[in-house]
Length: 288
Image 1 (cartoon, rainbow, N blue to C red):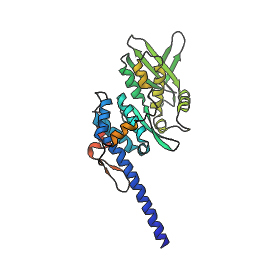
Image 2 (image 1 turned 90 degrees about the vertical axis):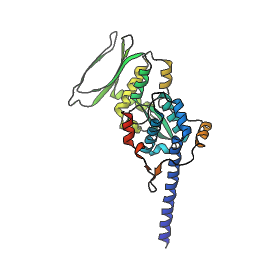
Image 3 (image 1 turned 90 degrees about the horizontal axis):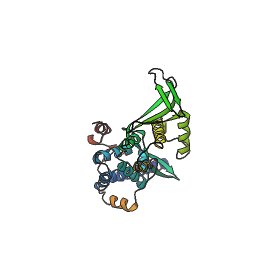
Image 4 (image 1 turned 30 degrees about the vertical axis):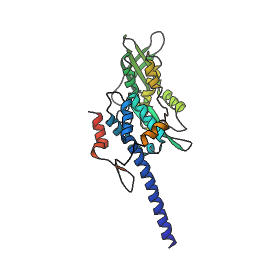
């Protein structure tokens, strides 16, 4: 009898936990999908970025990384607003920007990170560059670099058995025809990541996308030597920051949320997406 009561208690607690998780997930998804929030995104987004697609991609990010739903609303919405202001789509499809959940004294917060493709996109918008490229150097490539009065860089990649990554470089061509480049060794990038990481451990985005993050790092270092606009520098400064939506704006938005707009699995809390919101369709939309 006692065992049956204990078992029932465990089942009841599990059901309660599922209910709380489900309710929390409902609220954050409904909040981002609300007309009020969409209007906020629409005002911030550049004309070339579709609001509905931005919202779908934001929801997909949270579905793919449930820890984002555990982040404070202020930091999650702040990260999305920063992404929309820069006109960069979050998530790994385009590699323009990432939403990174991390713990601060037991509270999950969302950090906004610009991907290297997002960094290139922002640089191209500065209209002061005619081209910018970034490459990885492997140990079996032919590679030579020289500094001094005449800086030189020569790279002839091999296409089989390239070996391990040994370095990364970015080259920018300015409108006047001049060129600037910056090189970082593999060890340089590793040390840079350790110096600037949040917490004691390497983040998942670095673990899963090391080469892409190394590309972004070398582009950011090159940026210091380029005549880019103040506007670009202000945009780039938002990288790897936590930006929180104001409580007043958050209150205005939450009052708009009235009912669930997505279906959920009763047992797992997993979102049961319609065809229009599926990950495959989001990816298809991006590459149209």
